[in-house]
Image (cartoon, rainbow, N blue to C red; front, side):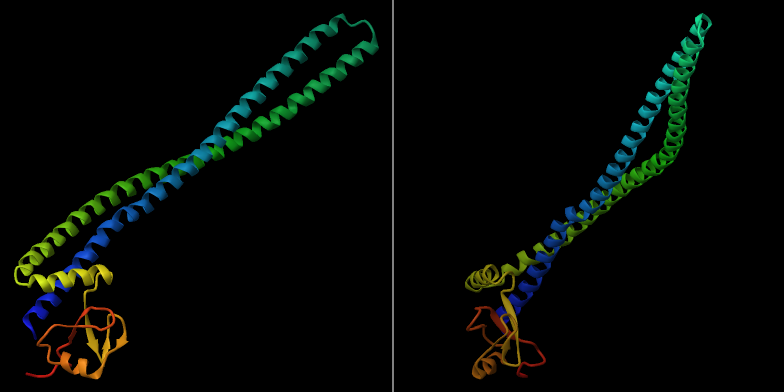
Length: 240
């Protein structure tokens, strides 16, 4: 195989590895976002239950106040009953006391219901707090894992860059210039294999004579259609 072509193929492999590593590094923040989202949802759920807990506590306080207020009114009415002189007034006082007692009884029922709800919500709060702590631990763990992975990927990329630098010293400037043009134009694939008279870069059929010339792999040939450098894999190349 043409030595320059062999070097370009090797360069393509290195650059493909570098591009792949770079994509993986850039995707790391998105992977951490999943853990952040999980934590945000856990916090939102906890805050919702916490708000409900506070609402029920305030409701209980209000009802406790109503109960005390109605009990005070009942006590005052009972105190005044000693001064009543007629049955009509007495019955009126009894009806008023009965009304206050009914209101008080309803408030006491709501207090009991609120206390039960507060106790239930308190249990949910403990579960939600545990979920928030777990999500925080998970986020911290994932952050450390991804940071370690980033360092590993960057080290691996540096190895490829070092190899690339050494390789560039052997590639002719004209070939490298065309290679880079192909890289930019073709989305990172500057060289493509040819199989069965087809460029595998653009999947276009090529003239039979061009394919026969490629089989020798002794010179650099470009695809007529996409401009990529072409080569024949060893199994299809013409034996020397």
